[in-house]
Length: 451
Image 1 (tube, rainbow, N blue to C red):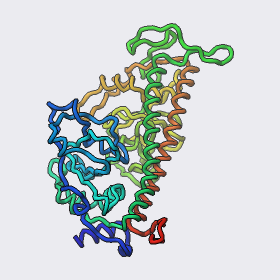
Image 2 (cartoon, rainbow, N blue to C red):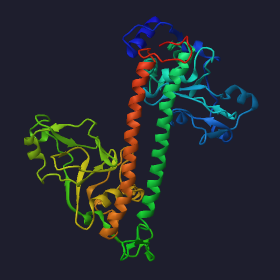
Image 3 (cartoon, rainbow, N blue to C red):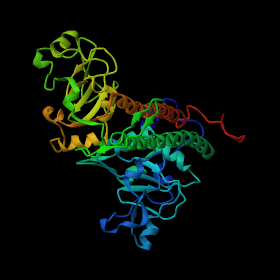
Image 4 (cartoon, one colour):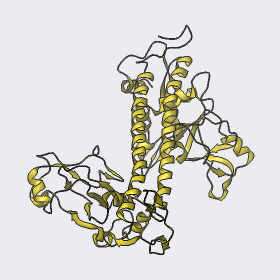
């Protein structure tokens, strides 16, 4: 235990354990023996008690009950697996080692909830530990390292009750625990609000895309007002406005660059020696290029030998052809880029705005068409000759611009919310580092509190 504690505390803080704090094993903080949940028998799924599944542990800082599944159990089984407010749950198996023993807390007063067998329950003793403090401690980096190091990996990673219960927990006095928990909970609640706003905006965006790419915005009258379309036609993509066209993607592309299969070695050269980024399927994400993800850098000499069909330009589109299939992003500037693994470049003609085509290639309608024409099982891909034949709905340029503007507003909102989420996530990590170690001592209302 001492060695485990020292390892955990070294990860949390270089200083000594604060005065008044102590170390207790997780199992000693539980009112009940740590135990697995009810067998999730498919024959009894769909009715009965609400059931916490593995996936429900990943839906936010607390377990949400509105979308729980159902499981029929006997009365005695219900009593055994009944969930109470402040119960903590840990995953006991994971396909990824890093996912083992993920922890979440149940904060509802509903009395018809049970938990399933792929997780373990800890029922915190409120006289010893604040449940929310305990959850936060179990989510901190060093505790996560403890759980991961105690997982057993074969085809998947598992962890047993003894290893969960053997976690050494750094424990301040209970009033200090509660204050720490309140501070971290406030940040969690902010993150939860942001997550729900992102979810609602994404749902709105999907619905708008479906409407805009089938019914459009309409036409503008003399005063600039948009009048909805009234006449429609049947097409291979369903009903669309009479004034629209269906055009093969290739008919909207003036230049397509495809250097898949090209490597520095084949050119007798190597990566490095310069600062020109190589765009690959690793950093072309859905809707944006992630420059924080690893990418190779090339020299001017490599660029000249590689990009023989010309330079990339601002507002060109890059598209992933496999693993993953169908991610699309806009080239943000006129700097040089090398088109690398599994990525092609599409330069639109003047018949279509780049922003409209960018939005359409991200739509569910195009994704379905892409999937039907893809090949492969574990890693789907598409041939270039098939990609350029895929149909695209084409309104007038004015309507294209309006559709792209509407969806762009929602994209900007999602970007703002994502930035807020990143800010509060960073804040939360910093607070955990300081508060869970005693590096920062919280000020209590009572005279006996620490300064």
